[in-house]
Image (cartoon, rainbow, N blue to C red; front, side):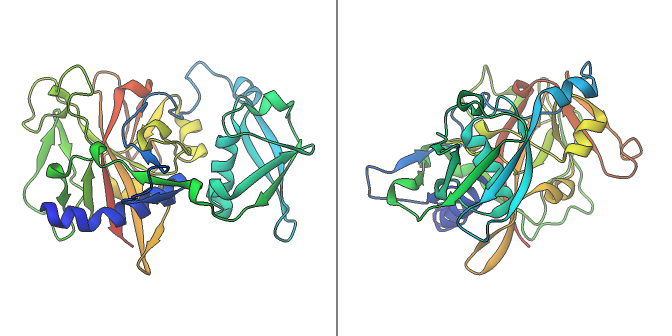
Length: 313
C-alpha cells in the first residue's frame, strides 16, 4: 500500500476506531485541545478474559452483578445488564454503547441522583446487584473528540489483501499455518521496539516466531485500542475455560466484530495478533462442536495485536 493510499485510508481507519471504541475519532485535527488516540499505549492493562480453569461457576457468579439500565432520554426503556462488580463507569458506558449505539461521550450515568464518573469504580458509589442506573443522552461536544496518533501507525507495513485469494500458496508463522486476511485491508500498528525483541514478529518461520491469530473488536472504551483488550461471546469462553480468546481464522473473528458505516458503506473490523506458542491452548473445530477453531491465551501479555483489518460488508 503506497503512502498516498495510506493517507487516503486514514478516515476509514478513524471511522473504524470510532465504532469499536464508542468515541469520536478524527483522522487529523488542527485543534491542540483534542486528545490523541494511540494504537499501542498501555496495551496490557485492561485485557478482558474468561474464568480461570480453577474457577467454579459459583466463583464466577460472585464476581458479577446485574444492573437495571433505564434509558431516560428515550422511551424510558429498561433492560438488565450483567457486569463485573469491580467495573468502572467507563466499562458500563461501553456495554451500553454496544447495545444501544450511544457514544460513550454522549452518556450521562446517574445513580441515586449522582453522576457516575468514567474512571471511578461502580462500587465507589455503593452500586450493587439489581440497582438501577439512569442513562441520559447528551449532545456531542468538541471536547469529546479524539484524533488519531499517526506515530502509532506503521504504514509501510500496511497491506491490501482485498483482491487476494490464497488458493495454492500456503504461509507459515511460528510453525503454524498463517491464514492471511484475504479480502481485508490491514493497517499496521507500530510495535517495533515495544518489546524485548522482534523475533516474535518474524515472517520466515524462524526461531522465536509467534503464530498469527485474529479477534473481533468488541472492545472496552479506552484511549488505546490495544489497551482495551479482547472479548468473545460468553458462552464460548465460559465453556472452554480461562484466558484471552482469538482464532487463526479471520472469518470466525468476523462473527464477533462490530460493524460500522463509512461513506454509506458497511464495514467489518478485526484485530490481527501474534500469540505465544508456548502458552496457547488450541481448541479444534471438533472440540467446539463445529463452532470453529479457537486459541486460548492464559495471560494477556502473551497475545500482541499488530494490525487492524477492515473489510467491506
